[in-house]
Image (cartoon, rainbow, N blue to C red; front, side, top):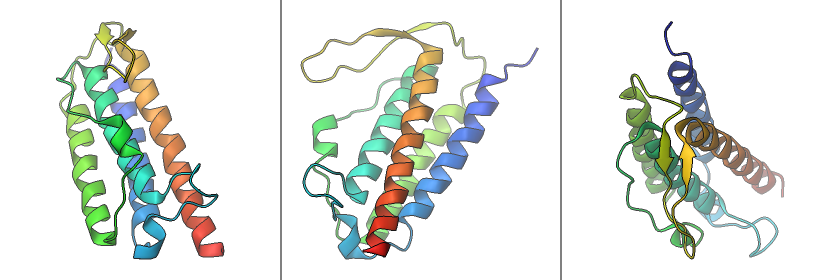
Length: 156
């Protein structure tokens, strides 16, 4: 039987990345760094930066690829003044995420994978299936946050 996980994950990834691009495309420069409820909330630039780095990292874990360089704390400090630069970043990172799953044939979803280390924490071991589910679930949450932030900007 053909593995249903990989093609299903590709579909969800493509759909979510398209929604993220739609949430970012056409946003005016002044909206990119706007935090809807002050410093405790995240801007569109932060959300896009964080979720794309996170997704790429978790997908690499899921498929057993080398972990990309990542500075998680800096993702939450990201700013961008050029809407086209942010859109290029979204497109470049989306392409990298897509390649990780495109080349993921015959993944053993029960295999144990080592996660990336977070500041103050050691890497953990998780099943590959957890990593793919977490990547897609986390992406979906932040795409929704980004879309809502855009809606709040437009409705203010």
